[in-house]
Length: 299
Image 1 (cartoon, rainbow, N blue to C red):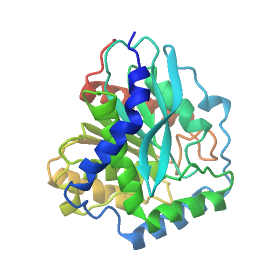
Image 2 (image 1 turned 30 degrees about the vertical axis):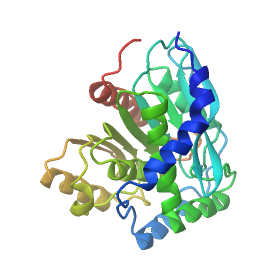
Image 3 (image 1 turned 45 degrees about the horizontal axis):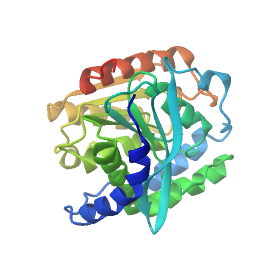
């Protein structure tokens, strides 16, 4: 069994070294058009107006194998240490492929931690990041404010994601890395592919904000898997089709699935739009896509 004590012990030291390296990187690309991003926040507020943040029984499916999950420092942003939820198979003996998991607009809550452990049970290292500065929302208005804060300061979120990648790649030793997120996190999963156009190995987007800007998309090498609902009033079907057409023109490796009659957050068991049949289908497709692109073994 792999001993993660050195990982915990050197994490903060490694972060300081990695921060220096990040500072020397090329300037980050423009991640979001702020006008569109603000509009997306308001659309999400309408879509989630009657939802709750507490996990339901459907959100707490046991992992397929024993998993260890723990709070882990992985970044320093705006002079604050950032803690995520780090999960991995308890019988791990060698570093496994990693997924950077990005929470939806409620923040890094119990639902996201449970999903991180469920995914880790499939044979991955999973780092569920925190883009909300250790805050979570229990009401739609609180979530709206947290999401707006990121929209107004995307540089901090980008720095957070960059250090998350450095952590799983350089500290945890993952041989391959993917991103995955829902809603707010779905948009940031795509942003992660833009931040690491040559290094990220796969990106999974659940009903996140997308773009048809081919200049932004062209550098991405990662295969992209996207799930959307054609009744989503926040992420319009027109924007999804525009995104898909741009990927086709660029001849990028992609799969876009649009579920008929599904609204926003159809995979979230705590939301009013939850569609278990679509959520289960998307999860199966997600696991197959990650297996294909990360080549996870049974170690």
